[in-house]
Image (cartoon, rainbow, N blue to C red):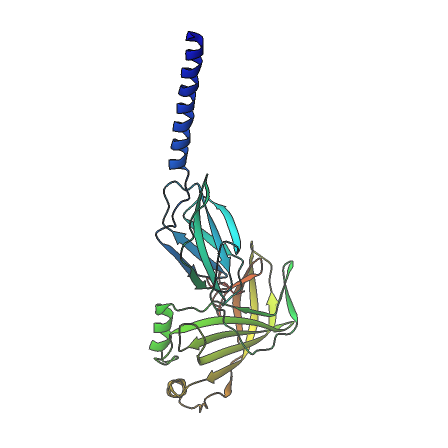
Length: 296
C-alpha cells in the first residue's frame, strides 16, 4: 500500500513540473510586436533603412518590392542582426517599398507600416556617344553622369559670378566620349531639386585627347578645348547669360556655339571599376588628386 501511494505522489509531482515548464515557455516565446519606427532614405543606387530595435529580437527581416503593397509574401532579406540595413544594387531614379519585422525563437513578428524611398536621379544628356578611349587596361566609352547635386556652396558660387540665374536649385555633371580622341564635359543646372527642369546647359568639347601613364589609378590627360556650347532653357537663364556675355544673343531652347582658344588643358582621370572621377583641369599642369564627384 505504501509503495502504491509513493508511485502516485511521484507521478503527481512530475505532472506538476511539466505543467509549470509549459506555462513558463508560453510566456516567453510569443511573436514580437512591430518596431516603433521605420525609415527609408534614397541614395546612389541604394536605400538606407533604419528602425527602432525591438527587445527580445534575435534578428530582423526586411520585405520589399518596387510597388506598394508589401507583405510577408514579398521578397525577403533575412538574418539582419542590426537595426539598420543598406539595400544596394538598385535601379536609379526608382521608388522602392519596404516593411520590417523582428524575429525571435517563436518566429517572425508583426510587420511595420510600409515606407518607401526613391534612389537618386542621374543627370542625362542628348550628346551622342561614339568611339572609345583606352585608359590603362580599361576602355572608356559611352556616357558618364553624376547624381543630382544640390551643394549650396557650388550653386551660390555660379550665381555670384553671374553664370546661373537665381532660379537654379540643383546641378549635375556629364562626361561623354564622342570619338576615339574627343570628349564632351558638361555642366547642367536645374530649377528643381530633382534635376528635371533644365535652366542652363554648358558643354565643353575637346579633341586631341592623350592619356598618360598611370600613377596608381590616376591617369594624367591632355587635350585641346575647341568649342563650348551653351543652351538656355528659360527666360531667366537667357537674361543672365546675355548680361554675362553681352556680345552674345541667346534664344531659349536653342544651343549656342562659342569658339574657344584651343589651348592645351591638363586633366586627371581616375577610374574605379565603372566609376569615373574627373579633377578640375588646368592650363598649366595636371592635377595631383582625383575629383570628388563620381560619374557612372
